[in-house]
Length: 154
Image 1 (cartoon, helix red, strand yellow):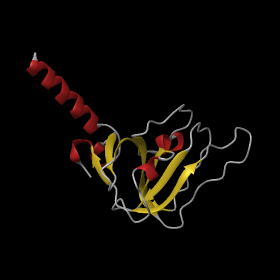
Image 2 (cartoon, rainbow, N blue to C red):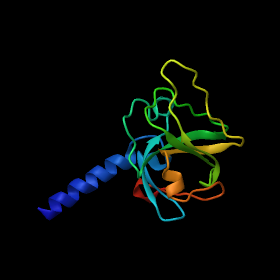
Image 3 (tube, rainbow, N blue to C red):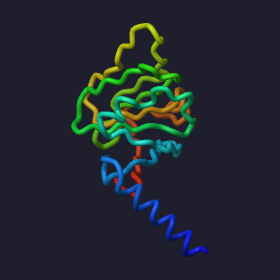
Image 4 (cartoon, rainbow, N blue to C red):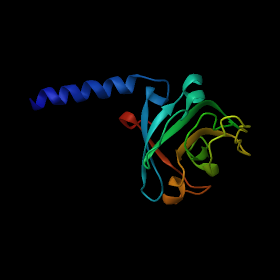
């Protein structure tokens, strides 16, 4: 029984590691704040996933997040169209250092304007967390977030 369970877990881990288009094909990761706080991340690494983001979600857990992976560094704008929850948005450079953040960004009104949040500097990643999570974890501009990709890929 235990060997069957181990084989099943190994098969699932192999499938997860091969799927997606993030580094190493990762579809998930864990982010570690300097405080030790952990966030379990979904990966948005293609145009469709980045466009959808957290749209239409009723909630985001206190230790959940989404990491947007871009093909090249840039001033990647994020908007809150069709989002139902406020988010902390952190832009990270290629070394996962926080280069800009907007805390508690509210959802856009259903029938109103929805301006994008654009960082003043280029970033390689955008990390979205439930509003208040960045403050709870003590995250500030200049901090490095350790991102551990599934199977330990970075």
